[in-house]
Length: 106
Image (cartoon, rainbow, N blue to C red):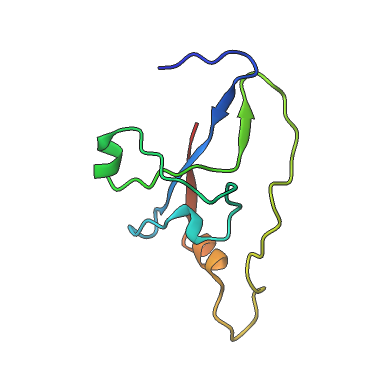
């Protein structure tokens, strides 16, 4: 356990995305989410996470302890083509339809 001081930066890390519809996990950055400057870096906390197949990586999100924050734009990204009849859905639409959800670690 670690005690944070007021205003101290708290890392928000991302892990693989999972779904209750499918057992296949998906790497968080395989979808077009905003990435940290210089690209995501692996950030395993312990051997157990590595052995469990967790893909814990850095994120661009900034959080400070006990500091009220408002919405900030991290980046502009292309989520893929819109849905069209007769055209296969893009990665983001497929992930949503398969009920994938993000796993964040604070």
